[in-house]
Length: 148
Image (cartoon, rainbow, N blue to C red; front, side):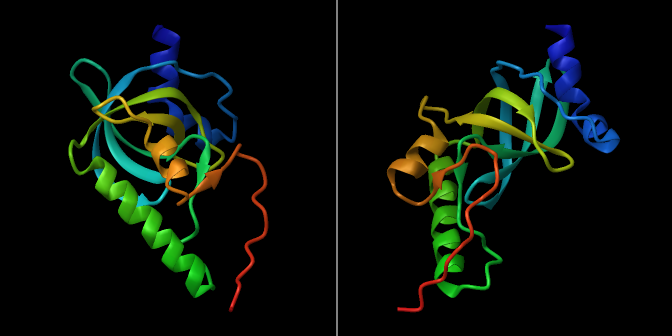
């Protein structure tokens, strides 16, 4: 367990050295949402152990939202819809649980399942609403902008 806590606390150090974090922390780790970044990413204040808090960006495991900075207006609007839906999901309670926590391919970010205060999966709800697509962390398909 101590090793798992060190992995979470040292996520930024792992990314700074270019080493991939292959270990996974099962969780749960309690966190408070500070800000919704987009339809699949949050900034949270996690509490991996008592009296210890850290701010970390969390990519929601298993989903991919349309990009807010897409050149395609339709995709930007779809990204805003996903972002607003995520904001609505967490509006009832800013406290969440992070589970299945691991390092991400981008510096300073983790990937985790996000469990809402009522036990629902944030990623699962967004998928069911059709606002995001499934994502396994690999190469994303090229975005196509339909102008029709």
